[in-house]
Length: 117
Image (cartoon, rainbow, N blue to C red):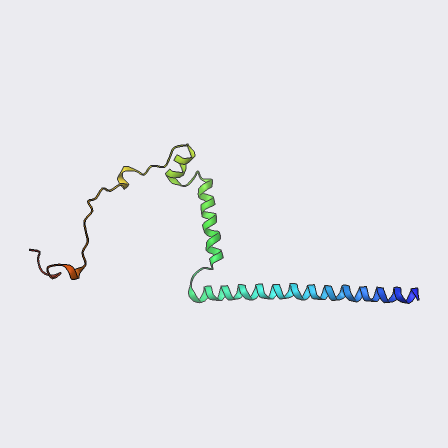
């Protein structure tokens, strides 16, 4: 009786291991198929629309930023911040204007083509 139970348990364990292995292979294969189909879809969409895929542009931007950072920061603001100074806008970028009310064309006392009175 002991020999029969051992043989049955070995057979059942082998069948269970093979079943789990087959299920794992089916799962991995299905994941690979979905990934390949997604890649084909994204590439076809990129070809039809003429735009690069998002993951390509994202990595390109990341690499550009990384290269710019390696060269010494992000322009004058990066170098000033690296030296410990606060970022200040150059004087040429500051414009002082007088505020005034902007009216809609319907509320004007004259027609848009007429000279003002």
